[in-house]
Image 1 (cartoon, rainbow over the protein chains, first blue to last red):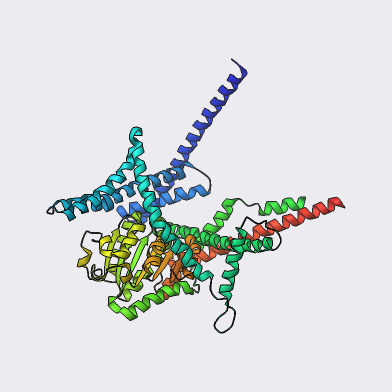
Image 2 (cartoon, helix red, strand yellow):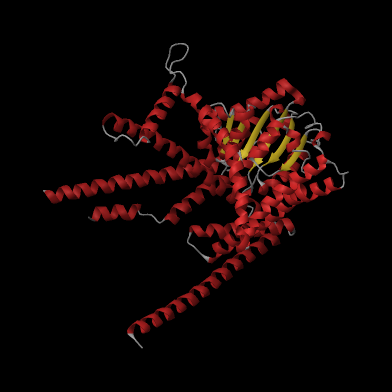
Length: 270
Length: 289
């Protein structure tokens, strides 16, 4: 047996040992976490803070999953992974059910059934076609599951891209460019003869930021200084976006803490 | 060298300590109640003023369309503002039409609408209608703008929209006195502005999560949106305007405290950075001499 073989054997042995050690740890984490959750819920149910029933079970499960998901803040762990997988699975199942009842049944099956029950005419025929044809085009996506006819799915994508582009391009030019040009070209002076400070800031912001993204000229001299001002405008904009992002994340945490300590453990009153 | 290591050890905090401070800064203000002044920003007040204006000029014939373009993930931010706006609309006896572009938000919207209509004793069909979800987003908006009844022949329960007092006379999107999109991402405000407002020129406002708010201010500047409510802070401002304190106002104490804690940590981080730089420079200067 060569030295390399011996090394690889000892490595695989140590990997196996480490895996079995990790699995034992994972079981311990699950056991301790669920014991704590069960004891806490038993106390809450016993004290009458939590009512037994669907609503109570829902609160208990939501609390366990919330703690499981936030446990990632300490470090990655099997509880987080379990909660994450549950979330993805439940969300997908929910989406399938809602799609079935809100779209497939209502817009396809019931709509066709209603049309079928009416006396046949050319109007009814074309109304049926307006449902059947898009449904068929949509179903062609699933031909990707059969390699020999998977090319048919390109028809669906071609229709989606064609329709999407045709619809998006004129509307996007209108809403994002033409409509946005108006506030960028406001008079810099008010009717009373004073300076319109807001318009002035927008004017300088637009010009300097555009200069920053103008790469055909080297950013030196006047161009360089103007581009630098543009960077400042960009930085302020990124700062505002980041500030709002922080606020949003805190809002989500606030709602979860409010849930945990109001609906689950009644610490917060009022 | 010793000074540098002391400064480093002081400021090189484990991130979990910061999380602990943030957690406490959110939990404690829930336990210790105190009031914070809440003043509505112009972009939030514009929404309030527009609804007041609809009530004044149109009275009970006024109709407002709310598009619930979010799901449970953004409920914490958008539900408080949705509740405050629906309460305002119901208080003013304005007719309400609700729909949504997000399939995952259908049940959430139904629950919220049932709760609010029961509180204000509003009758389905006469005071409000729930149209539910229809696929398409962009095409649906364009269709609504051209022929509302072809886009929504029925409500979410399959009843004809011609049979309801609220939707009977609605022919296009321009027949609505006001449109508000509660948006948490793609298939929301942006689509409403691009395929709806800019094309059919109706008055609309946006209510969105804080993450998105900064991106929508240009629409406000251009007049494509007449008002914008952003995040929990926007919800709190609207609750204050309507005089109906809810989870928006309640969330402002922890939000403000968490922001203060974060600002302190940012300042500490910068003090560390500058001190470290100063001590390093001093050490280098000492080495040269």
